[in-house]
Image (cartoon, rainbow, N blue to C red; front, side, top):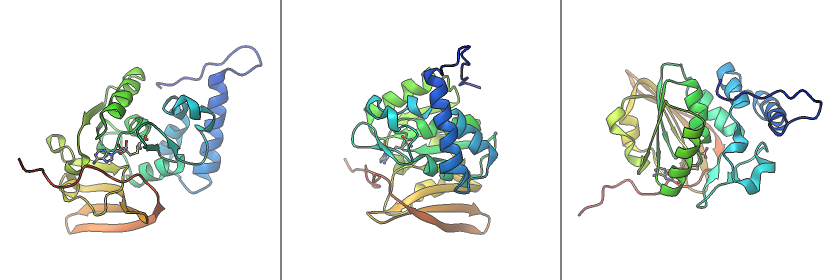
Length: 229
Ligand code: SAH
């Protein structure tokens, strides 16, 4: 219960109550009506104050049905896509999850509300610093963030029960599959201008891959190869 909506005594709604109403409507129209049914996902989308993660110039669009620009030409994903990717991971409270592409930290907060431990990697330092301060301000003690290239995952804390990638590589990064636990799920966009959201399940008998839907993410940068010298 990190975010309580304060009830004001008078009839005029407080600013936070207005945002809570917008959030409620967002969950109903954009998320539940489109088929997201996992109650934990719905609860958390109703709780995390998306407006506190967006740039002040986009405050009025914080709960709109689309992605929004954040700093450094990056974006905060559309609410429905955040909910869909979170649901696809079939999270349990005890899970350890890796996120690639922290951005503003909104998806990180959504994950941290549901699972025990979130590790998140962001390649752009200024975004990482911003996300860290927001996550600290909201008191998420179960998040560890590092600045780095997500193609390499975060080997030190592997294996992960779930991995969520918020930037699109052209191919599935091998290291992320390697860092996935047996029984774990990886959800990521793949492609260039034409991208598809892919769900990967790792089982005893190998990797199962399912195409979910067409999406549009920023490209994954940094490259897959270790630089020589
Ligand atoms: N989940 C984020 C979405 C951010 S957009 C949010 O809710 O705001 C995708 C992010 O991935 C950007 O911040 C971008 O800088 C980052 N990114 C791109 N390539 C990356 C890489 N190789 N490793 C880590 N982060 C990367």
